[in-house]
Length: 543
Image 1 (cartoon, rainbow, N blue to C red):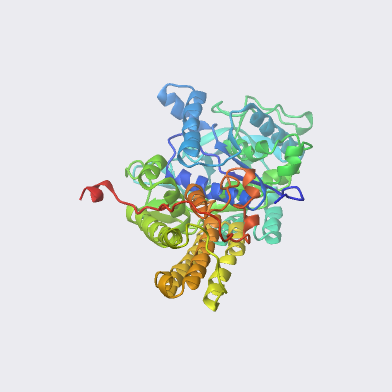
Image 2: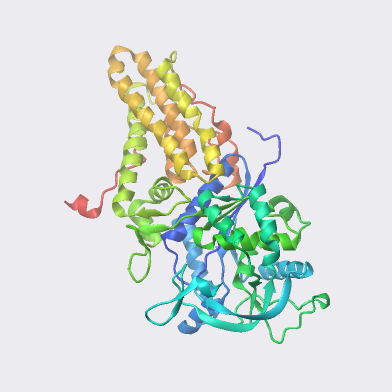
């Protein structure tokens, strides 16, 4: 299946993690969702560039390092490594670059976008006085804060402590971009999703935008603000470092090769096709970021997907409650593919979701072991025992055969539409609905009875079942790369690619280009082995 035209580029990113602590299952949720998106696009023939990494500057990092008696860079390096280990060793994330904002090319990119915004007349020097949250790395207006019983003032939205801050600061003319942003939202209603979260952003902009303080002088752990141009008239009295969000958001440009806008890399990958972020940072990505880019004369990303949060048994994860889950613990307990499947099947990616042990086991046993695993094992075992272990030769298809094959055939179009808006939940729901129909078909057709009464019909039923499982396995590759690979091996589908990990997955019998390349009768199959064992806890096994 040689491609006759260049692959279409597809650039997607995660939010870069703030390495002030250890990664938890909430971080894993975003990584898995973005990785599934990357793998799907590679399997669909796209030239994917997938960026993730860590956001290492800011006052919070400086304060934590001071408490631990190490330098901010030592803290950043140690904790950034923990996030990279999560990606590499725990979650099997297929990123193309893991960026660190302490890297030299990122410093150059950040200073370059600053100069562009300054040249546009959008940066000026003044003094800032207001409430600042170190934890959120964010300023709050007085009416966005509240004084609690302990006498301390907190941000009402995030519940974090704020302190009064007064210092010389550079400002970005965010107020200038209120109408351009609203024009953007009107002209591109799919700029962000899901719609109800995007509506919150739109309402915030409609309420009015104030200019944004974008530098600090009270600490030095950040990217240095470049010297002002003569034309700007700015004459700072002290050294400034960039507000951490100017620095952090620019990582998306750094990954695309900015500031060399003439490079092949930049022309191919910018603008980004998709930024995947959490709901707590939607304003930064849907308001500040497009405003910075408009000021700098750069194209805007095509879409920002805002995902919800994970709660543990309905409660927000927190160290004080002791309910923070380490990704490695979950993977060790349930298996990687079961974890990846649960995170995207249990609830919509844009909504908040809650998890507990029973929910994970329920999905693993019902959807994977019983629904998919049992159907595959039963049909493959019958082929092994009754048909010489080779793909059966089907006879004439009945109405029931056509109905199931047609439902399975339609799944790729459904998945493409769902993945375009990051509705992984619906894509999997649709796939498992077809699996439910396949199980009902298998039970109604009773191939174990046909073995004696109508062997030719038995062969047809088994062929239709295996062909349905093949298509399900192809679509399962982005979500469960290891298990789907095993299943395609058992079905005798010629090995190709690596389940979406690299661009090599875009062609061959396991790519979506081979969606209609049905199983070939007579293909010798390996001995069937269970792919999805039921989950048993050690205490259950002991009992």
